[in-house]
Amino acid sequence: MGFQDRDYVRRSGPSFLGSFLDRGKICKWLIGINVGVFLLQVAARGNGADMGFVTNWLDLNVYEVVFHGQVWRLVTHFFLHDVRSPMHILFNMLFLWWFGSDVEDLYGPREFLTIYLVGGLVSGLTYVITSLPVVFALVNDPTMSDPGAYAPAALGASGAVTAVLLIFACHYPTRLIYVFFFLPVPIWLFVLFEVFRDAFAFLGGTQGSVAVAGHLGGAAFGFAYYKLHWRLSGYWPDFTSWRWRRSQPRLRVYREDDRPMPVSVAAAAQPPSSALEDEHLEAKMDAILEKISREGKENLSDTEKAILLKASEILRKRRN
Image (cartoon, rainbow, N blue to C red; front, side):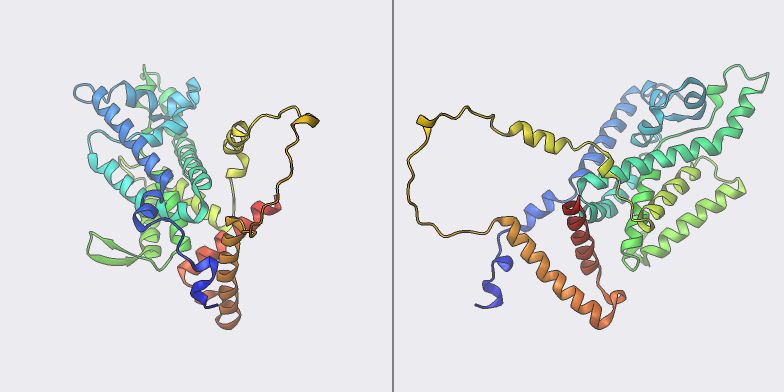
């Protein structure tokens, strides 16, 4: 039997178009939610500087979070964007799709969603903590009748996207991106430049209207997540298993009279699809391990590293 005749190399998966449509499902949902909320912001926008009740109720106003306990703003703010600048949401969503779809392929939809949400939350907490001196100065100012109107406020998915971008750069440091669509730059250099620029602006007090503290918080979370090998989705309740249990048929009362007569059927035993997938993965792992012993782990390609990560995730789930 030739290699092409083996079960695990036969073409039984989805078509190329089907693979594209199935890829990055969480990314697509997140982009759709961000765009939908942005349209609500535009529809609710008032005249002049009035951003509308949607933005005012959901942005990360530090005074409202600290003194009025409106903690939902720590999550809702990274689904909002500046209605005065469509480029804000455009670039955030482009970066989320370009890099987030690969990170979702590596970690799976459930873990990727956790990365995005926790990255955005850490980004918001970083912004709140670094803005506290300004807020307390406003509160202690006797001439200030409404500190909330002048308190620092942030919005945008940049912090969560930065966390995803940094994880992507750690996995694929030599991947080229094209700055301004023509200048090839390795992703590690681009990320390093962005982090240093935000750090310089934050330490120098020249951040202007950009919430660079949130960017730095998201970057710090992404780097720690990669280096410490965190897996956070295990802390979430598994709703999919609950739905699976609900879909199972209910137990029936068994009676001796209902026992069916035995019927002899000759059938060839077929291995389950999961066994074929395991055989396929094991075949790839054997080749990769042989390459590691021969050339070292540093010579693995991006695809081979992704296979190693996927295999380790499968083994971890089986042990649990």
